[in-house]
Image 1 (cartoon, one colour):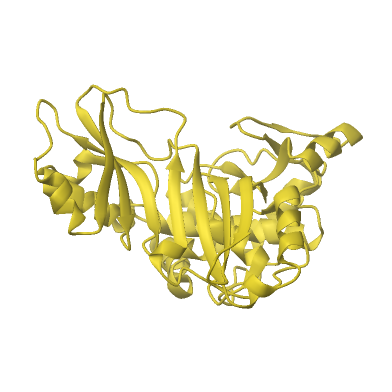
Image 2 (cartoon, one colour; image 1 turned 180 degrees about the vertical axis):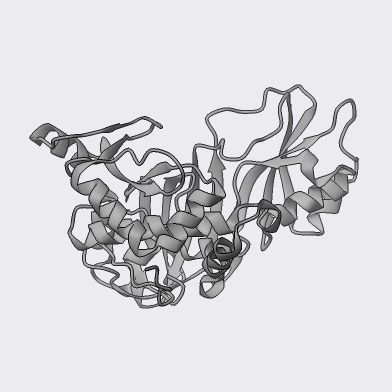
Length: 348
């Protein structure tokens, strides 16, 4: 019953789709990402937190280089989020250094491998995954999009109405290879030792979520609550099920106070009801190898907002004829979800 999709899938856009062709990330400096936390290191403790700026380097590779330079095991280095390689990114890493200081030559050693230490502070605990509040992006776009006369107006629409909260193409790997591996793993029985970081599970869940979001975009109800929707409260992890949609709820959704959610499939209660549950179940049945594979692998059911709101967005032209956009997104959201609404590009 499950079919292998054509890659890349033709998931629909909102607000009329992208305006023109463009380019981004021509150099790492065109794609700047900075983590934003709701807290700061305390200044004492067994873990040394390093506020780093890395260039053209993945987060796991940066963590390995920090571990090697500090003479610790890779598992003694913590980080909150995985950041792109072709980018300039700023984020905290923690290093477990109980009772000793960092090597005197640490800054110089890391500088030779594309890592600059911008700050260093002690903290009692290791940095855990997913504890930052949001990522702040500053992206430079070039090509026809930078000269399109409707760019400012279209950008304003995205800022006011939000964009579809798709998982980006990097989640699925080149030509969807992570998803292909997930299908193969589910067919023979998924094993954690073959997928230690859960990339196959993540790719499968992300694909199914995108399929649900695409279906709701096609009927223009990705921002509008429907009977049985599980609604997420903005700025919190709280959510609730609505049995009947009324005018008050529609107004709250329009203002961005609440947003419909889609499933991150796995074992457990689906939460949604009525017509929403029927739509989601129908899509899981269409891709039964993925949905049942996730359940058998023990992935836990969760939810994710369908609509993505930009925090403090801005747009400006630069001196070289490009356009610079900046915005904050909650952790787990993809800047490519915003870019695909603005411009045409092969990887979007």
